[in-house]
Length: 403
Image (cartoon, rainbow, N blue to C red; front, side, top):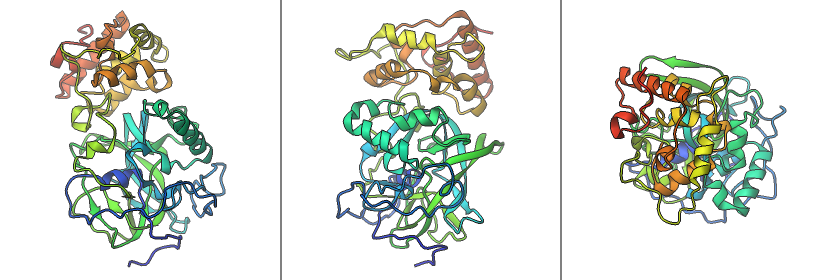
């Protein structure tokens, strides 16, 4: 076993950070069979001592020291069931692929991880919620009313992330998504037989300015991920477990790993491209199924009521015209940012019922206002100039007004 940089208790733990957890669930690799939990995954009545440095222990942030499972503290990010994954919608950081640098002065307990800055549907792993009050509120609601947490932004933790109250001063929070899965396929390198230090990035705070990477068109933000020692899996194929002095953003999954990474979540992902496990776009044959209970008047009202700051542009339409067909960071943020502050529950209900993405307005025949149509037309033209194909050119919807 590699020598740890610091000592944290780990029993025979299955440790999983959302980033790593999903990693482990990827396709490929010659991982040994998953370790089968021998104890029930329930919160421990005995709090774990807070040993984390950096922006955690000893600050105004109230760290979750309740062990969410018998396998380790919240920063171990242990996944015990697909139902652990709660859908959110908004601005987030994806640290799944990160190779991190241990932060000086933290005694090896925190690493600086370069993560992708993105917007859209992502997932919070409930066992990895680092804020105590957020964890308790989320567990209470999702236990009492599981259906409410199956809708994007239904869980309390999602609302806190979107309201930027989860961690005061953070620019964004690390979650998990399938963004970049096409360009960087989810894989798996098992380090269960070579335990060591890794970074559990689920709900870690991210600070500083986002930095564009011209080489691949992405934007990077740095997140402070807590470290844990134990067995884990890296989310890419063919990597080395011996990564010192760096730490992988990684995790351990205690459940059977599906052959298709998209099966990590329940059903296709609404408002995401199909190559990122998204539901398909609207077609002429896409309809709301009988008995869906969707109120189309409310759907259209939610589209009409969410406006871009200091304008009359309806963000639901501009975002639908862009987020499912573009990987241009600035374009997606221009089209969508601010939408996360609005009530989108009936829109998501409609899209989930019809199993389609970026399609709520088409399902319910909602019509955008004139200023929004002009914005949609400009966004579509910007996508074409970037070599992308907007939804208008695919199915003839959300075409807006030609600028």
